[in-house]
Structures are given as structure tokens and as C-alpha cells.
Length: 119
Image (cartoon, rainbow, N blue to C red; front, side, top):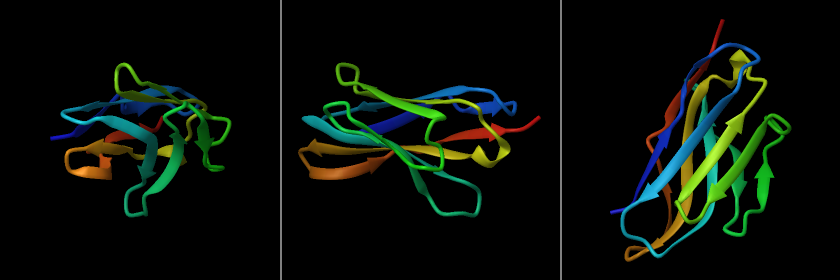
């Protein structure tokens, strides 16, 4: 069974920074594109950034310039570094990955980690 587990969320003051991590565990053969989404309370889920297996990043305009996505293929981990945070960035941040396993190729989700930006 493949699992994605996020960590690193919490309370941060406006203007602060935070680093989120997501680790994939279980039985699988390869992890393709990995991504971070965020979902504010009562609103739709929206992609923040993604990164290919080769390490090519892509960023949504909503946070471009304030986020950096990276991955460590040896550790099956994707990291999202957030800077210059403001209250509008408050959301549940979720990890997503396209993973090849015995069940086939498909997108998997983590449970999410809460990021709250407040004074």
C-alpha cells in the first residue's frame, strides 16, 4: 500500500517562512510528477507547484516567487519552501504524486498539513 505523509505545517506569523515535506512509502516502482496543492477552508483545492521526475519545477502564479519546490528521489520526498507568507496563504497543504505500483499508474494524495498564517 502506497502512502504519502506530509509534515511541517503549523502556525506562522505574517512575513514568515515554512518548509513542508512529503514522503512516499510502501510498495511502488516509480514516482513521476510530484506536486503540492492547497485548499483554504470552504474553497476548492488548487495546485501550488509541481516537479517532474527530472526535477523541472512549475509554479502557479498565485505563489510564484514565494515558493520553491524540490525533490529527493533517493528519499522519495518532495519539499515545499514557503516564504513571505500572508493570512491568505492559510490552508491545508496537500501532497500529490503520480505513482507506478502493482495497482497501476495513478495519482495519490496525502492527508494534508495545516498552515495557518496569523499574528
